[in-house]
Length: 353
Ligand SMILES: NC(=O)c1ccc[n+]([C@@H]2O[C@H](COP(=O)([O-])OP(=O)(O)OC[C@H]3O[C@@H](n4cnc5c(N)ncnc54)[C@H](O)[C@@H]3O)[C@@H](O)[C@H]2O)c1
View 1 (cartoon, rainbow, N blue to C red):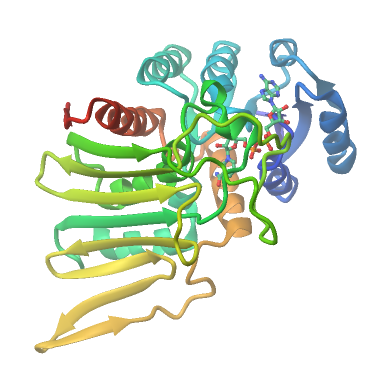
View 2: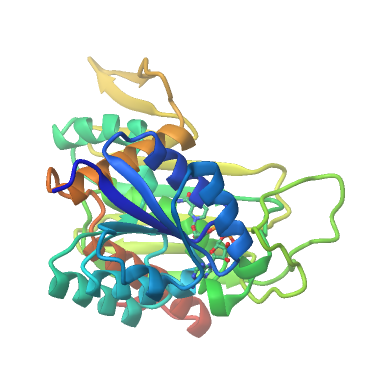
């Protein structure tokens, strides 16, 4: 293996910055190529990060045998075709969440991973964050006993990013597939990835994108456009697992809520904990309940170090030094859950697996 691992990044929009910065900070990674449908955007990143090869067509880029691995930072509708093309070309893949738009696509990506013998790491960045790693050690040592209930919320009162995010053809859905995927995955991962038994969900399109609202700024897609919006504003669901555990979730792009809210809480037989908004542990000792605050650098999810840890881990995977923490199989399970919730909401019934 060469001294550095040659990396290509597809998609040069908002989140690519976190990938590029993290690769640039990893001495074993070499930023070798960048691709975007928007050539000017790709060239700007190439200049900033000193990347020698610029493309607008990922199929052309993948012909270069020097590329060993790629990061996919494009719209959700291109995650599966780009992943499959890259795996077929013998590259390792780090694919941003969600893995894709449908279960059928997810299974096709999984098949390509198995055929190629390469690794696909799903961009479940929160799995790599320090607060998750800290609490995972407690879980693995049995400190909380069986985790039988989880509750996750990610509410934006105003935050439909517009552009491709609000175009169901390109995104696959709204806050559920965009934000819900993070918090549902985090709970499921920390619960020990139990097998899903059923899901029951509701989605609402009551408020539109509220692009009329003034005096309050929010996250927008690189190509912001408020004209098209056919995704849900709000989704909620209960997810049942075969081991009897359950997970309750609600997420929104907009809601008449007093403030934005993120919370991820898990409850076990011997103790409980929160990973969002801040790491906190709840337990009982000598008949007294204790709320414990770990003394660590970051009690909350830190975007910069979270991405650095995810990318550093991926480089280790490419170099054959370790296994990924977020394999394609988990991306497939997450697509089953998300698509099951959309199906349940549409039909108004519980979906069983
Ligand atoms: N992990 C996280 O916390 C996180 C945060 C934000 C976004 N994301 C994910 O990252 C992905 C991109 O989101 P974003 O906010 O950067 O969007 P964005 O709109 O800012 O950027 C996407 C870029 O991809 C390019 N693109 C689309 N299809 C392409 C193709 N076939 N070939 C080449 N380029 C293509 C677009 O031209 C655009 O420049 C999404 O899947 C999103 O869910 C993850």
